[in-house]
Image (cartoon, rainbow, N blue to C red; front, side):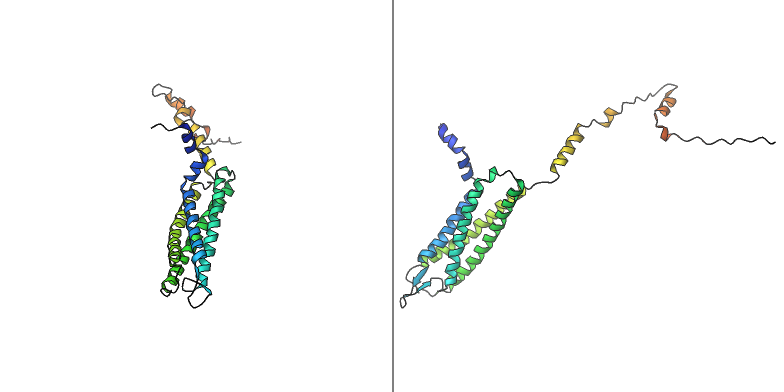
Length: 234
């Protein structure tokens, strides 16, 4: 099957390669899940009872539960958008320290959001479990959707933390890598000792011992013992 060149250029473009990255796909899922959490409780999370016109949270009438899910979902959505914008500029960052700091911040926030959504899932599920059945006519499906996507958010943020850790480990600067590489190049360019030592030791001949002894360093030769001179008697 022949693929047009325009489609090939589009598939190899920088924007498409950016969208196909696992980190980008994970951030999109995080943003969508966060949007579902805070929008479902913001629209249908507050209902009035049949005997009262006052609005109450459908999660056990606990306004703290709905407020927590709405605020956390909105902040997580903004965080995903901000990091998506920063990811587009990651390849253009030349400063190694700034890039390492960005990856470290990504890892810390991913772990933090995973903990936040874990606590939120336990809190929301507990409040929904203690909610009286059929207390509100509407909003039950929105509450269940918020709780379900809170659990899914835990998984995607854990995976995001794993990707951030992999990037941090792969791109971590090695202080002595350059010096070690240069030292390895120097060692590889040095000639071998067998090539540098070109002393030909004759194996036969009457002068072999004298030649070998003359080739030795003067410091290695044995010192001569001093001679005692006898003074004649007067």
